[in-house]
Image (cartoon, rainbow, N blue to C red):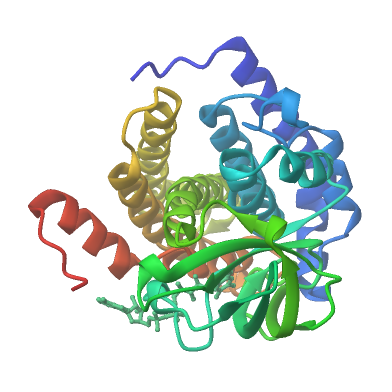
Length: 383
Ligand code: FAD
């Protein structure tokens, strides 16, 4: 793996970092308290080209490779994980599978708007009764003339109440993963009701919703990919999604490191900066090593994706390590801040709350370990 960033990568990273430092980080605490980022952020992300990364320019995107994508997500994660999540979902979990599996009509209808930040997407896989075992999902789409009628519900859907389109996974056939089909559902379709979920521990600036589908009628042209291909589309999408969550976690870890080092240098106890105490340096060293190791794992996945090599197991490894590392780093950083870390005047408490969900969504840490174990042994613990 060549670790040297090109001039283009470095320029993109600094564009994202500057924007985050000017327009995101200064507002993150207020957005967290208000339980909503400024919705104008979506349009700004589009104007900056950050919602079209890795989508070919001829489809309305801004191009770029997956290392570029990860560099940007790291900066967004450093600034506000709620903003990072908007991008990971709308671009990573919706626009990218549309680009990969969509028809020319679907490309034209959705991609220019999603990449420009004029439209937002959400990813509807999880249901009240199926999380880790997504292949057992119960939402059902039944053939109805030349279209489909859908009944069911989806839970914990990021961007749910803001989105213009849902990438929805529904059962069209046999029980299990092979009976699942993907659909693109405009959110103004009659029969689709969205309810916002409040009271999250972290990611409070980002909308999370329950979706209820009660007789939603769809034309066959809303189907993404083939009948029965939905679970494969979901899993291949989540493989890259895990890389993007991991990249966001590197940003959290880096933010924790920057904040903890700065605080340790200026806070004095026993007549000298706490940075001079060996046990504080131990905390800082642990955060620094976790951050660097997580970043290398993320860059390794991005490099594999960009070289069209298999990357799913490395994506699980990066997601597992980076998410657990982000929680550790935020916890260690909070320790460096002492009691001040426990109030929201400083960023580390929010980093800890935002980091916590990353070991849960897009496959829990347990699920990542089972995926890695299956790749190592050839034996599946899922069946
Ligand atoms: P469960 O699957 O019930 O798991 C509970 C516990 O059991 C976990 O510790 C898990 O690791 C463990 N477990 C389960 N199976 C096994 C096993 N075989 N071996 C060992 N341990 C096991 N979903 C979407 O579709 N779209 C979204 O946009 C989205 N956004 C989200 C945003 C937030 C803030 C949250 C909290 C969730 C979001 N999710 C979304 C859902 C998320 O992906 C699920 O919560 C996650 O997959 C886990 O499912 P679950 O919560 O049902 O937990």
